[in-house]
Amino acid sequence: MTMIDFNQIKGFICDMDGVIYYGNELLPGVREFIDWLYREDKAFLFLTNSSAKTPRELSQKLAYLGLDVSEDHFYTSALATARFLKQQSPECTVYPIGGVGLINAIYAEGLAVDEVDPDYVVVGESQSYTLDTVTQATNMVLNGAKLIGTNSDVSGPIEQGIMPGCGALVAPIEMATGKKAYFCGKPNPLMMRTGLRLLGCHSDEAVMVGDRMDTDVISGLESGMATALVLSGVTDRETIETFAYRPTAVLAGVGEIVTRAEAAKA
Image (cartoon, rainbow, N blue to C red; front, side):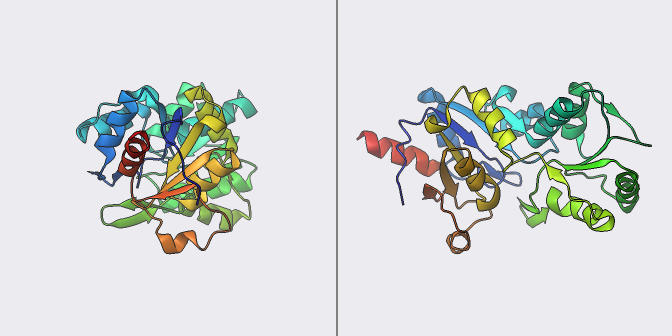
């Protein structure tokens, strides 16, 4: 497996769940990794498929865990989805099933919410996900609304195990309507290109760090980036073998980036 010279990498795009924290617990080596990014003046961006929280809330969550990272270092699938809708149809109306991160992103792009006859039904992670909202969304799609998912993850890590992700939540609407959702988050290259643009880096100068083969690694690979898979989240070494592609490097966690970079300098 090819080694990555992390000292030569200018930009780091990192997933969050399973990479930086697991539920509400900071993962080992993360504090050292963040300190190293600042010390080495690396450009970095947390690119998360979770649509539930705003960048400010994500910044506050890391602050609660003892990390000082400003909100401009975060980009979410909710922001990517709202930007996609704005580019596709600037005057469109939306029926969202999602958290405050999705709702805020929709309003920030100047889009209108319509609970009767929207142009788009948009599904993200949500505490308000109920049979009533799914039934309403199903009938809207049958009446012509286009179905959008913020991300295709079917599950996400929590302290007690896993929880259903957006891909699982949108599935009942797909099955009931026969319509397939379009997903805006990773591995959609639209989100990755935006991430690289925000970093100010070319793909050859950046690395994607994540814990999932089916979103993080494939998105980095298809964007021309080096990929570092960490085993601190949902993927283990046996799972890697079930995929036809490979990450550039496999690490125990992000702390190993620091130890490898320092060893290369020695």
